[in-house]
Length: 209
Image (cartoon, rainbow, N blue to C red; front, side):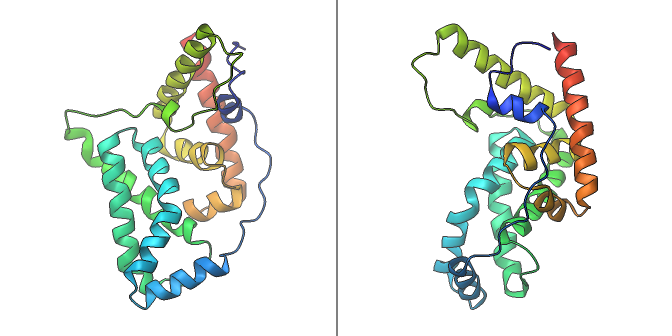
């Protein structure tokens, strides 16, 4: 194995997962905002957007690796949510439902953007910054940045189902149960995808040298 495991994020992506806990229920405060939104309150919906836009934008950015596309898909996600919330029923967490909308839109955007000529890449370092450490040397910092850029390229090379499960369970720290709800599959399937995704990414990583 190469010596990149000093990076906790990369370590987490490539190591085998521990089974996640059940997702927490919708909080009373969030449920109140949902009910107000269903009654037509734009202010309540803006509060819901503020609660979840960080997660949704990171998910879009990590999936699409394009700043312009990520911002547009994030906005489209909340537009779809505003239109559909009046009929939404709490069969799961609101964030799970929003992630499902965002992933579907990301897939649609990925299929259509092949015709686009210019892209703005978002470095993964900006999505997962770690606090500065006085003991980190410039060489260490450069190695960290290089590893993060390499991880970004590796994730982009994975098939979408493998990339999605790593983004959800590792990059965003969702439980396997939450990821299964978002992706519409069983927890066993998520566990299998995580294992295969790590093997594929590790093989790619070591092949790059």
